[in-house]
Amino acid sequence: MTVIKKLVTLLRGSARELGQSVVDGNATRIYEQEIIDAKASITEAKTELAGVMAKQMQTAREIERLKAETLRYEDMAVQALDKANEALALEVAERVAGLESELAEQTQAHANYALQVSRLKDLIRTAEARVREHEREIGIAKTTESVYRATQSISESIGATGSQLNSARESLERIKKRHEDLADRMAAAEQLDQEFGHRALERKLADAGIGDSDKVRAAQVMERLKARRAASGGSNA
Amino acid sequence: MPTLLEQLNNLDLLTSALMGGAAVQLQPITGDVPVVQVSIEGRDELPIFVTCSDLQIICLCYLWTDADVRPERRAELMEALLDLNPSVPLSAFGRVHGRFVLVGALARAARAEDVAHEVAVLSDNALDALDALADYLK
Image (cartoon, rainbow over all chains, first blue to last red; front, side, top):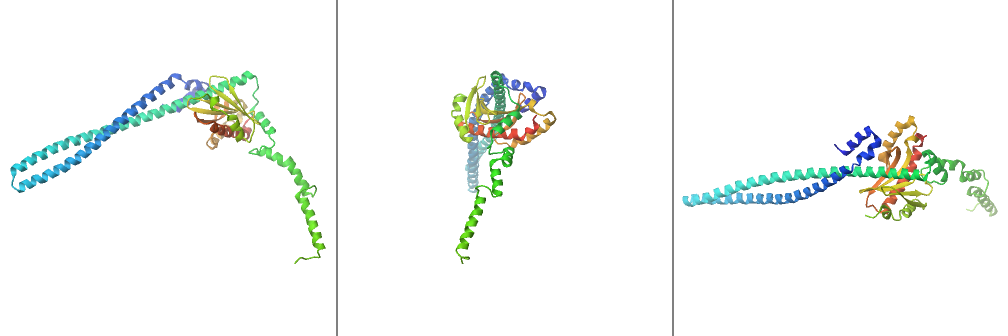
């Protein structure tokens, strides 16, 4: 059974137990030891694997060599026969027979090595999967432990200082009231500022042509420019 | 491995820098596990708690409790939190002993700078979430 599945089963039973049950000290220690052991066997298996793969390559080379040799000697035996030298041909045939039995041995050895390689790779894959799973379980157990224990300390600390926890909404309201210029996502606060804030009033005054805003002074500038134009006698072509 | 408080050396200054210069205070909390409370000026009601396990540094912000939730909108809230979870960067919604939390985690050997970044984002997310989901609360 995987660890999250275990947690869900616990939750269905009694949520309050979750923190305690997940944090089974012995389980964590057992997993930690199993991880150490598994990692050791992985290292061992990998070393062995390297060795066997090397031997596998060696036998493959031997097989090629033996095949080539066999062909060579077979050719020579045929040549001896062509020269009607039966005795010599027989000697060469013996050699060929010897090479063939060596080849059979090497082929068998090669097949064995291939099997070993496959077995070791499976072993390593399984052990690695086990390590990953245990690490995951330990991670979850330890996180749960930290979060639950921290919450406990924090609750106790709050309890000890005697400070009342405001309701969440009250906390929110206090924070919001405190920040008039909260320049981020407080759309509500921004709306308040828009409707009732300082700049809104100035804008209204400016719209009405009152006060010292650019809008108001723009009208005055226009007056000045028109007057100057009139004084200089009309058009400036 | 240094103690949590040692590892979080200057967390207050680093976090302050990320939060527009707001004053940040660190306070160790007594208990079985090391816990450091991070209070950010202007958000004192939403402190961030930093703790650690063998493998992680965990940052927590408590949002509201089961008691705060409107019973008739409870199921809807749960759905909303689940739907929101994948979208919220560096933080995840959760519940511990009836308290709804935002959680963020880092590697145990994380630098104070990284923790500061996590704390800042968590704090912003917490405020944002609380504001966004206030309708579900009493």
